[in-house]
Image (tube, rainbow, N blue to C red; front, side, top):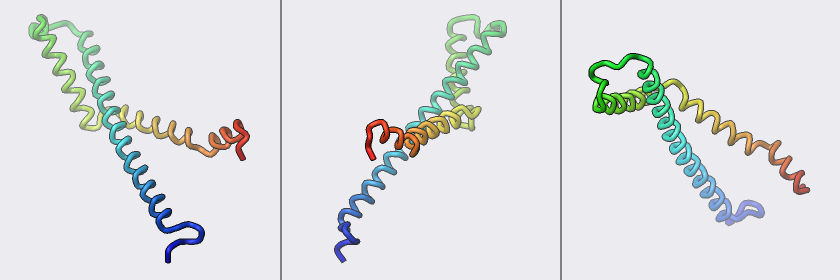
Length: 121
């Protein structure tokens, strides 16, 4: 059995391999997006801590430059750990927004629009 209808078995296997490669690429991209969204959420939380800290009077520990550097590192670590613990949902929201945008870009309505705009039928 060398083929399935007009398709050859080799062509089917190549198509499946291409599909697997595309899935692996999508998963890798999702991993990169997840890491980037978590880093953004971590930065956002760190900045939020910094701005909130500016609203209170400075104590003896933070009155000098070394205290400010310590607080900066502390805020970064709090942001990182808060994100690792689940964060405030900003990372998940970013991932959902990207997924929605990808779905809209690939939707049949957009494909039919692009076909109509180029008179492809």
